[in-house]
Length: 615
Image 1 (cartoon, helix red, strand yellow):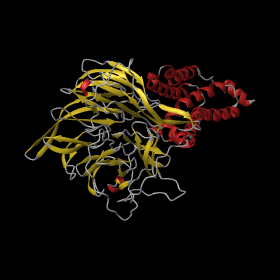
Image 2 (tube, helix red, strand yellow; image 1 turned 120 degrees about the vertical axis):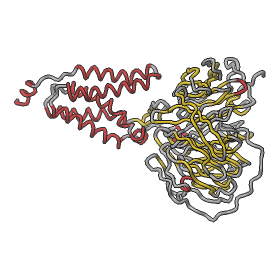
Image 3 (cartoon, one colour; image 1 turned 180 degrees about the vertical axis):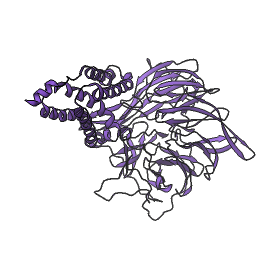
Image 4 (tube, one colour; image 1 turned 90 degrees about the vertical axis):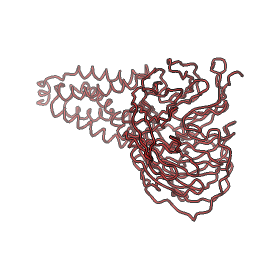
């Protein structure tokens, strides 16, 4: 009776601000993005702001008893902490371990308002029990879901946690396996292999030390290198790593002659692109506990061979699998996996010629998003980057030649350039841009611009270097460097820095004095004379592109897997054609070889015939 009198005497809760804010939160965070996906980021931010305002309302203006105000917040914090350990690993580990908290705060605050309203006339005992129920309901949605990763704008790809991933569906199918590979001598076994019946090691962002001595076997003499004709598309971004397709002119009237699908097949996760030689294409993927270098037929998509290493890298944002692209040279395939395993394989059979663990060799930890570099062949040296540190290996034997320099965060690949008549390797790392002698690793010049990098540098027609840096917010901009060599001394100084094009992990191309690329999710063009933006238009998400230079034409694949043709002209943004290609998040670089377009993402790949101009 006394407790009932106490409830009657207490000032009623001021509920209406909480109800209004909770309604705005639901509309902003959960309804608006459904109506228009372009408002996803805005809705997310609006939801977090509304959640914080609800917490301020509850703490300062709700008129609740102080022990209830503080007690409710403590209960919410405890529930959020426990929820992180019950959520699916993709949510618990997302956003650098913060995704579960980011997701649960809005729903928990809505549950707080609902509890305050529904239990306002209950006595202390039932009201306390209702508080625990509300906290559980606020956490429940995120314990029932998993995420397939995030988009370039940070949007999560949610599924019920009991549904199979595309990789699990692929493994459950009766797969078409290529014929067994012939044995070949292995110069160095790069990574420990599980004994029969044990699982392959899984390396994640929270378990990524690579500074372990690799297992060794007695070296065997690898077969000699035989000079062969250069591959048509030898690896990452093409012959010059610039995404330029030369000597190809395609029909741009896709309403009359759209890209014709040649084949489509499932593929394991990974963000690898393709290397192409004749009718053979090469890529990297993950299948269960095995990281794979695979060879397929360009004409049919049929598998030719698969090389497997018993290791697995996974992180929540990008998912599982290798990030690099194989490199072809003189009948061999060189591939660097996400955990640092560097393989030299026979391009025809897939037989191992030599293997190293590059991350162990240079004593670096696997970076947060995995080792993403693609090997670069310069003469008789294989140059790789492992988490921001460069290393060179003998192309024939795999023996280490040099290591360093570098450091900090980098997901970029070594880049071959000739400046002032001197062959050098450019690399964008944590400290900025560096250039080294590919035969010795000696630093020729460097330019500081901290933050790290993902995309490749580029050269202007007159020999300047274009570099970029990234931050937690994405791309920081682009900078043009003048590199000079005089009296045995190299110098690199800034000509300009532009915010008109801010690449993040989507590479840009250079064409006739202009650069074209993605500024966030929107295509942008800047003038290389001064860095001024010429235009910005079209929303393609975190897509990728290639340049058909003879036609002043950009061929894009959007983040959603849609193809587009855009004019590579400074006069203004002009989209010429669109066509569907893939379903789902597509971060992989497209490849065009003669009249064949190759595209893939983390669960499927496809080939399309492009109608050539005049045919």
